[in-house]
Image 1: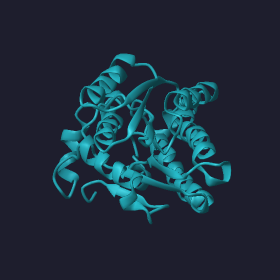
Image 2: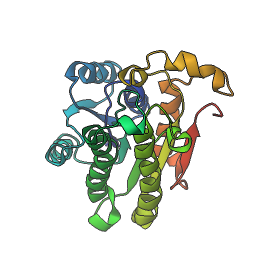
Image 3: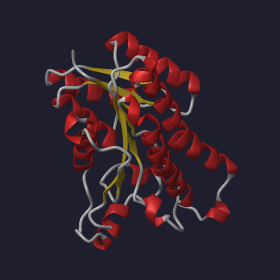
Image 4: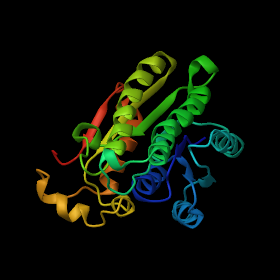
Amino acid sequence: MKKTVLITGGSRGIGAATALLAARRGYAVAVNYADNAAAADDVVHRIRAAGGEALAVQANVADEAQVTAMFEKIDVRFGRLDALVNNAGVVDQTSRVDGMTLARLQRMFEINVFGSFLCAREAVKRMSTKHGGAGGAIVNLSSAAARIGSPGQYVDYAATKGAIDTFTLGLAKEVAAEGIRVNAVRPGIIETEIHASGGLPNRVRDVAPQVPMQRAGTAEEVALSIVWLLGDDAAYTTGALLDIAGGR
């Protein structure tokens, strides 16, 4: 039976690239999406067209009831869960901290941090040997912003990713003896749609010259690292924060 991976925010960008690569590497893939069913269905169609197995599952990861229902659907469809990629996340329009509203902060932390906790909680319940599982792997999506701070743009987003770093380190130690490895990747400037959603559609072009490698990364390059961390080649790797930032 194929190993099963759930990828949150799997309908576009890094999530979609990871879903497609994981399927090529032999995983059955649950592609989570919040609103864009058409994009998720497109990823699923591409996986199935290549001979893979995939399912689109809707859930807002900030909603506990929706997260629980999503995992129950995966239980029914695949009967197992071997890996989780906590990729779902948002940015907001650029702003200084003195211009941020409570509503903005709540949305940012509910999706980027609370959502990752909720999904990890349900994954651990299914994968931990303490709960009768066979072990597994979790990869969290952090960001180079956790190191840089993103001043004048989105310190709140950077703060959520700093929380993800700490969450990764703590959970890795908590479940290491239960067969679960937990790691994070910290992408830098990557060519995805997230910059436009933050009001900076030209950010990749503008910032690329500041990257030591003189270019932005691709979603596929990040996906390669994520899938490596999920697999047996990374069997002795847990609690790692892997920078994928071109040296930035």
